[in-house]
Amino acid sequence: MTTVQKIKVRITQKNKATSYHLGQLKAKLAKLRRELISPSGGGGGGPGIGFDVARTGVASVGFVGFPSVGKSTLMSKLTGTHSEVSEIDFTTLTTVPGTLKVHGAPIQILDLPGIIEGANDGRGRGRQGEYTMHTPVARTCNLIFIVLDVLKPLGDKKIIESELEGFGIRLNKKPPAILVRKKDKGGIAITNTVPLTNIDQEEIKAVLSEYKLSNVDVTIRQPNMTADDLVDVIEGNRVYIPALYIDAISIEELDLLYKIPYSVPISSREWLNIDELSEKMWDALELVRVYTKPRGQSPDYSAPVVLRRGRCSVEDFCNAIHKEIAKQMKYAVVWGASAKHSRGQKVGLDHILEDEDVVHIAKK
Image (cartoon, rainbow, N blue to C red):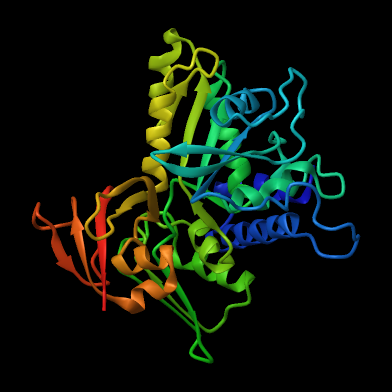
């Protein structure tokens, strides 16, 4: 049994540990996992296969799952990119990239090597382990597709989520509303604007102590906050990525799999439900298409400028084309969902665009 596994066993024995001791154990577990993800020391030889995937397209989607669940088949059919398919486990040993166009926007699809159960606890790593090698690629994705085995979807879902959690990947979650601010003196001050239902102040102080934070202000606005939430904020290296759950299915299995939140049952062999998969992907990536309209011409619907929601102002639109355009702009005319009038609205750089808006830039 590894050190990480021993600590996990002790954490589950809540009735035999004080709050302070429990907080210390959770912080120790997080620190040990950090060492597994980024081991120190020499060894040379570079980071290993799977690290050097060039980013292309407007967003990237990673396929994650156990070996031989159909990731490579679906990848090949969606993108036309050959990803070796076999009944043998671990056929895919490196990240295989491909491209899929959705609503005119190029999306990078990454077929990642099959998960090794227990890899986040150090099991099966060799010197670093295949799954540890491609984890940095998964952490950079804008969306993760978790491909499940239809015979045991809920069991696989739980294991895969646990493995990704161990590597600092948080699925379908937002960063905790917790602020930890270091200071020179004054000890520990804890302020909460919501009730502390899953943690007490002793456990909070234990986590802070394990990280040697003796002078700090902690402000908690996170409902149902846990010690794990606090550890995530202190570690500061967590990534929060939306995820969809997909599986090769038959018609009879459709109702069962739809009961899994965020699930999209598909059949790559029969090309069943692929349109819904593409639409769910588009929604989860929160992309916005904006079309250009030159003066005196019709809008160009063939090549949209693709922006990300939250960064889709007229200024963002200009910068996506060329950084000098925003400096030269006198005003913009916008048609579409974000415009007040169907005949078009004159706007400035801070106007927020909506999906499928049409924009004309008038220069000074």
